Length: 475
Image (tube, rainbow, N blue to C red):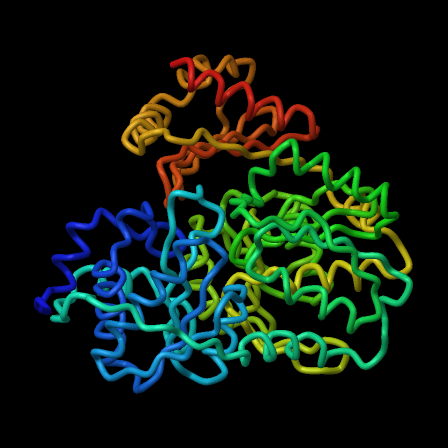
């Protein structure tokens, strides 16, 4: 016997919250009714501004993702909305097909967060939801019946086909002929798609590291094991590049010809330069080489998270012809249509992992990827995190540093330099008189504290993060 439920009550009692990239929580919190409540609330929140009778849904490779999609579909069917299920595809592939068909979309993914968690990303017919949409989803009151039966979902292949065509249609010659590209597949949502794109360009593709278990790769905090894997694979297979992504395929992980992973913001900088982007929106945590290289007429710094980057696009488009953004995790957001190889590439204002690797390979024709990186202003960043660190502890630490930054430096044994500038755009970002930058920020997706550092030397950036996090653990 079905029971009538109210979306806002179910969501509030679930403990699931919005972070920087969708609603996230423990798998145990994403019950059938919680997934249904979010789906019903999403539809209700955007219906005043859009007309639609269909919603696109896709998932990543987490075992919990398919039953979550089924629960979403069950409640959407109650609301007389047809569900188009695209199966396991990268988030940007779902976003692109939904954008082209002007319908909303729900991506079931936890991206890079630990295995015991998952999430939901929402897309309006015109792109990612905003922070205002998030508030509406949390507070709107929608009645629905509890989910008693999960429907079987039939996979539609259109999202895969359209995503591949988006990039292969730009080239009519095998311009990567002779190149050897390794794809670190692990459990990425795009692992059965990427090789088709590179092979269409003439490259030889080598499959690496495929996993039957879900691997929560964080492109901002690459493990030592994955660092060594790329170097060893590059040597063993004589690769020109290793390519990988996070779990849902919207954040790239790309190496140079020696197997050294590029930082995501350096990849974004090189991508933007190759695309001749005029105006950039990028989070405050990204490398200051973006401004120092003087390749972009305008750079706007934002809070961390794609909604904040996207929110800047409309303002930048008023003054500049080509607009884009990227994050320190490497996710690239194309905010305007651009011309590439005499073809039009449509805007895709959501994080994408494929465009950056294509543009890097284009930029490296006639030179090497490592040379492109060396030609940039030599500012080095590193980041890592403490997992299972209560958000309230992070906030207390940041409040202390905001009021007494020099005292915080003493706690971290960093008082050999003075604080030159305090930036509270997102967390606590301290620029020191020796040009060193240290940035602390609670994760928006999980109980984690992230630490970012930027210095003039790679080793000192790494050491700064390690020492700072060790001091925090000791405290």
